[in-house]
Image 1 (cartoon, helix red, strand yellow):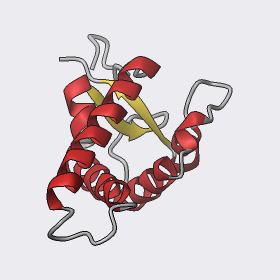
Image 2 (cartoon, rainbow, N blue to C red):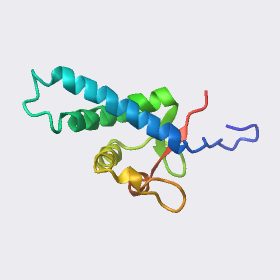
Image 3 (cartoon, one colour):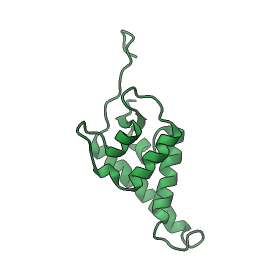
Image 4 (cartoon, rainbow, N blue to C red):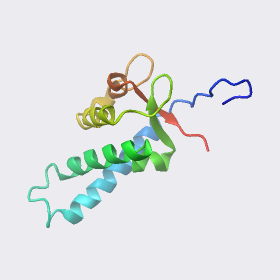
Length: 126
């Protein structure tokens, strides 16, 4: 809250931070899939994607950010009021990310998966 009682909105996360967070999440899931592959996954084709979906969904529901996003100081909040996102919308958002919709952006700079789920990636201020 600002001194005059109005809520202070967090700034939008930069594309660079979001890409680095995605690389961190994907690398982490790839390493885990490689370790678990002989024991749990018979075919390794979709194991990384499956682990990525589970990790991003569960962490975003619990902490409002995946592991990579937490490292990069990013939170996922509703647009435009910046409240906690509902779990079903996080599930849809992660599914759209797995379908590679983050590569498509709307006119206001938000990714298409954020536009469909009414969410946004913001920079967390410490």
